[in-house]
Length: 316
Length: 323
Ligand SMILES: Nc1ncnc2c1ncn2[C@@H]1O[C@H](COP(=O)(O)OP(=O)(O)O)[C@@H](O)[C@H]1O
Ligand code: SF4
Ligand SMILES: [Mg+2]
Image (cartoon, rainbow over all chains, first blue to last red; front, side, top):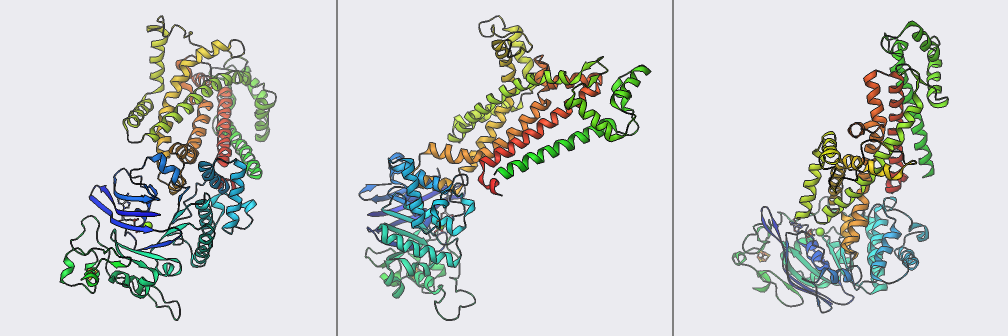
């Protein structure tokens, strides 16, 4: 349903051009859950904001192609994009504390989205808000619709944001680190909720996270991003059982074990991601890669297969 | 909500009491000064001095003096000016209130409407030449002294161009009662309204633009975009709505101060007998009872305006309501 080809997003800044997303290609099938994983700053958010048409920075240049059910989204008229956004493609953001407008009740904010896309009465939109709040397990929804965001906890607010995203039954849902800002028990509840909603609504989901542990629980297929590029793609099983790219392996090593004693410190990947301003020639991961060899001073390409990695150790 | 409202009103009454006490002490209990001599005015005869002492109860304890004073101002209203030979102070102040209120209310409507338009248009076109021109005009408006602007207005509309088609409708300076002559009331006030509001239009337009542009950076605006709302709706219902808190706070303070006498310069330039003008004249004659009454009136008004702002604030921002 979603076909992204050679998507690039470049920001003009005072220091120079920042290529935040570099020739990224991926597909999302109907009802599928695609996990996008990578360290912070790897371009996950920016690529999906581009899909949503939500990059408002006037200094951004977006090239490539994004096709949603056969319609091209890059360069689409803002008016047409608005009709799609919130109705067919919806988004859940990382920080529920600031994602809601502080001066309106949550019921009002959910109803507002429904009314923007559907010709129904205010009463019907309000009833939909109550039903949605019940669906995302908010206790006492009849009364909760009248609450303001500041009266709810972070977990409850994220449920509201999810309810809002689902309000028009979107075919595609983009969730940008929806559990990162929450504490662990709430995280698990929200993941369960997303599971359930996925079964009930059948929406395809693109789920962004930097946490491999979360990926293990929910993804069908995965995309590993590094420094604005896709470095590996494959099914969850392929990536977890036979990771091809050294970066994917390093990410897997940084998951805390599910059983047994937790190590005092997680094995973080040594080194830092490259500066996107003047990206070094050759493999972007080379400075941190333990398997680096002579060939790595050239640029490794990502193969076309369903399971592929951009690394000379793999495709050599 | 109701409870916070009552609480706020109670607080307001308490502050008013405190102010009246403070004003009384400053005027009548300053050590080393005989209040009777000051009320009686310069070169008063011993008989007058004696009359003042009796009438204000200066031979009695302090709290009786305070109560007598408050009774004269708020209950019997028979406070008398000795400098102006028996002029009743309370009715004199009461007469000036409609003048000042007419001036300030009209100007406030002008400045709120135009500042909203300027702030919203500039924020909607931020970065463009329209935005730049509007902000420039705002800055010019802020930097023109109201007294100078008033004189220029008078020069244009009363003398230089008065006989042209443009300004021949402008009546001579002065105030006309609304109940006697509504049309005259309106026409005499048009130029003063414009003069007084220009500063505030510039100031509020710029403040509002800055507040809206700041709101537009917030996460919830991105959520609103993700919902598929129109840019107009995002601007008016989300960014503007959350920016109004700053606007209302500022408005309450300025409005209170203006009604309390800060419109003095405008009143003087346009020959309007308002509260500011009355205080000004009383200061020139050292007319103590009038000064005291207008000071009390002014501070009460500022306190009331503040309470109204806080109540509006509670209505605008749900976070304050439940806090
Ligand atoms: N408006 C912008 N201007 C300049 N650089 C930006 C802008 N937005 C994002 N970036 C850069 O793009 C890169 C990718 O960011 P992001 O997609 O948010 O990473 P992730 O979501 O994977 O943590 C970062 O290095 C960030 O600094
Ligand atoms: S291309 Fe070379 S440097 Fe890059 S990940 Fe593969 S082995 Fe490491
Ligand atoms: Mg991100």
